[in-house]
Image (cartoon, rainbow, N blue to C red; front, side, top):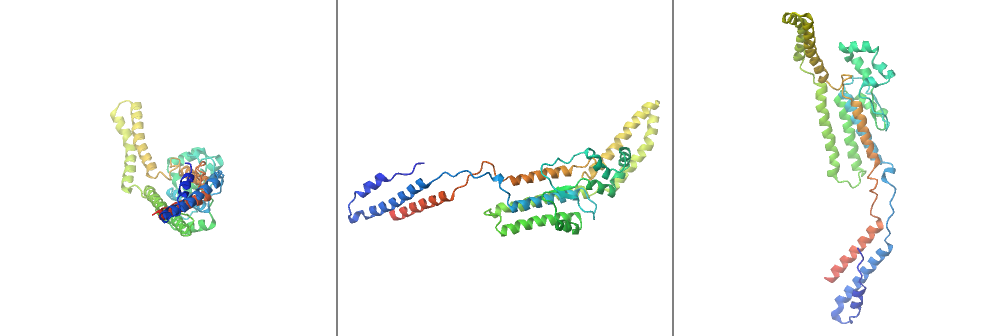
Length: 343
């Protein structure tokens, strides 16, 4: 908006004589001259600021870097405990490389060198072991998990790895990383690293961490709480009984042997297949090759965390210059003095 021109008003006030009844007008004249001078100075010295370099070219603050690292570490440790890594074995953690290929969902897509580390033998032997449940041993699970490490942004220091090894139990490992995150946020807030962010806004970080821990414990129930043992044993027992008596029943049902064989095959396959599917669903985090691809989910989460390093919107460069703020404050102060003197 154009600045107010007080030249005409000033000339009219200047024509008044020096009588005592015009003393308030003379004070008003003096105040308006000061206001006009301030506005004129602001109009002359006002310079449109140039756009500074985009924010995404600046290096992220140390606070953001450490927070991203701790969030990535907490996610990696949580996923590693969900797939039930063997107690006492070091969690396979490595440094995250941005824009790296996504971890494969199907473990058979891995290179032959990686597959040999957890599939010791030919595909035929591995298939037989899987059919008879021999691939679910602690040794096979350790080898399989070691071939699929979780990658952490910024890597894992020796002290962090030592503290994770010292924590006994899967829940303790996740809890200690959670406490690291909360202690870091609290310490940085007390040191003023969060700037002028209001405490209610900052407290949302604690709330989201708490929500994440609730979701982790819900998933942990599926991973650690087994299906009722008597029910599982009765199901396996009756499957064996069916394998013995189903062919006899089919022979008694029909006179044709090939018809009895076909019906027997489909009936037995149906019940045994449902039992095997139930075994896979009992723990979806640690039954390869049908397990949930936690490595891929964690890699996607890391890429989402890397977005925090890009900064603000690339076009959101505007910030109020200090000179403009100073001129605005001077004008407001002059208007306040004019109002006080007029009253």
